[in-house]
Structure formats: C-alpha cells, structure tokens
Length: 410
Image (cartoon, rainbow, N blue to C red):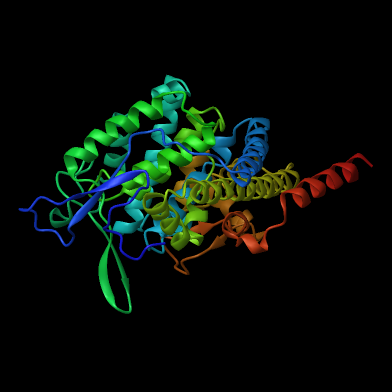
C-alpha cells in the first residue's frame, strides 16, 4: 500500500486539487467513481459469499422459529450499539445503557444508536423490506437520531445535514499526526450521495451481500457528514440486510468484528481507493458477516437455553416471578420500580419477586446501597458479553441442543 495518499491513482476514483482559498491541511481530495464499480470477483470472494449467506440463513432461520424474537432478544440491538460505540473509542457497555442514572455523552450517543436502529427497522418493516424503501432521507434521519443529543455548540455535528465544507481523516503515530484520507468536497459529496441512493435503491449489479459491501465502502469514502459517518454506515449494513430480505430482524451486529479488526478495516477501505483492491475488501467484509452471524447465532441459542431453564425452574412460581423472568432478557438491569412497571404489578409485589430471584442467584444487587438499588441478571449479561474465545462453535451448540432433546425424550 502506498504511503503517499494524496497522489493520482488509477483506482476507482480520482484526486482533485483543493480550492486555493481553502484553509485545510492537504492539497488534494479523493472522489470515488459512481456506482457500480467493475469488479472481477475472485474465487475466494465467491466462496466467502457462500459461507456468509449460509451463516446468515441459519441465523435468520433461528429467529423465525421464535415467537417473539425482538421482544425477547432486543438486547442484541443494545449489543450492536455498544460495539459501534466502542469502535469510536469509548468504553460504553450494555449495562451502562440500561442504567437509569448513567447519562454521560458517550452513553447517550450509544442509546441514540440503539434507538435509531429500532426506529429505522420498524419503519422499513412497515413500508416494506426492499431496497427501494431506503433513501437519503432515511440516511439523514439516522444521522439526526444518532447525533441529536450530547454535543456542545462548538462540536455541532449538524444532525441530519450533509457537511457544508471539506473534511479529512487524521492518523497519528510516533512521527506525529498527518492526513490519512481526504474525502470529496461538500458539493461533490452531495452529488455522489445522490448516486449512492440511486444504486442503493436498484437491484444492483452483484449479489446483495457484495452490493452491501460496495455501498459501505462508498458511504465511508464519501464521508457525507461532519461526524458520525462510521455509525451511520454500520447502521445501514443492518438495514440493507433487512431490505435485501436476508434478515427479517435487526438482531445482528457487525460492529464487533470491525472493533476487533479496526486497523485492517480502515486499511482495506483505503486500499480500494488507492489500489482498486475490491476483492481484498470484499473478502474481509464477507468474513466479518459470517463471523458475526455465527456469533449472534451462538449467543441467541445460549440465551434461549437459559430462558428455557428459568422457565422450567420457576414453572410453579407465582405469576410475578414468571413474568419477571421473561423480562430479564429484555431489561437485564433494573430497579424494583422498573420491575413494577415492566410486569404491571404493585411495588410490594415486584419487590417480593425481585427478592426471590436475588436469593436464588438469578439477580444481583449491583450498587451496594440501601436505597436506589439496581439489580442485574448476571447470567444473561455474561452470555451476551462473553468473549468469542469463550463461546462454543455453532455446531457444538446445535449438537448440545439435540442431546438435551434426546435426554428429555428418554
């Protein structure tokens, strides 16, 4: 990969000189070509595509077997918000987002991410899950929901608006800071976003997953907003999977893969612009789709197994306990007042249910306070947050479930 990022290139775009009156730390900016690019897909990309589609199909099939997947496993949306926030360098966790008293800027923006994904997924489901219902207006709405709260006037990210001026991406090392990449100036960025919308709404020139990888590259390269481009791009991946009828529910998180491989992610994107390295980027992207579909499948299977265990254990318990058990998989961190509202019972009844589950070790009081206590479902959060190295393989989860079914039959 070239070290000088501001030179003419035969790759899918070109560099133009910055306006002489502009006060920016670079001389040229990059303009990606209009879509679609001409790509001769290599065998390894085609094979990676097949593996990714298989894993997504298994995940979607699992969600479709569950009566209420979004009600029960909506915390997967929070997991995506957590991981997307951590890509930006924060330490926000799922637990932080559920805590009522936690209101830092980073937590608010992570909550905004979850809210934006839920709203956009609901809108897409209501209008029809096809690419024609994705638009620049939706992209701007995502940005507005993401960036609406948590910034000062001096850091105004212009929620829902394309940037009015130049932008650039810095990188730092032992030698100091320098411009790594300069996307197109604002008026060209807007024109390229109009082309982006046209292609996003079309049937595309490639299989859907390939198109999604191409669209993600194009959005991040155009960099249409002052801030929040990465978060918008990651949100749009999930919506494109739904609009392409690959996933029925937005219970998938690619941000975890991007966070773990952030340097390679940015290098692969830049290599497309500099070296026309589409196959390298697409192979990386498709491997990430497969890896995260497998991870989501494993976690969902383990969470479902945990829910079934709780249901069996508390089958004869009072109704308030059984209802609270159900809610643990939607709200794993709460107060007694929250529990009262969630299961629609009086405070004393909710307090009794919480006490029973705390005594059994299902819940743990996490503040150590006498008042304003918060309880969390440790096993639910442990399953959601376990490192990938601690998880079994998809095949092991399936085999274990089949073994359990045989044991019950006997």
